[in-house]
Length: 138
Image (tube, rainbow, N blue to C red; front, side, top):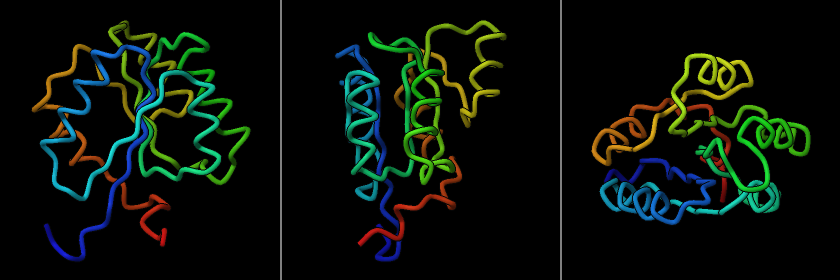
């Protein structure tokens, strides 16, 4: 890892423990500059986002307390300073209208489950997170 490589912090919002374990496996394969935190519902995400400043938010679209579209809307309303936070939707639902709705709501991308560990690692590293704010964190 380069001494000058910025840290990349990701918050994953997912209620399925198997998917969380899979994501943790993806992050074990990434360079040390990547870190992952997981929460299990939208309310927890909104709560930690008050203090946590991730570079990327990964959101399961079907959470127990709200869907991903509602979470993104509440996030933008409650934390205007995170308006530019890249957010990626993850879902087994692959209908074109669902993908379109997520992108129209402000999601940067829409990744289909089940997730392939190797492809996900490549997709994470390919994301342009250059505009993220936490690179300036102490």
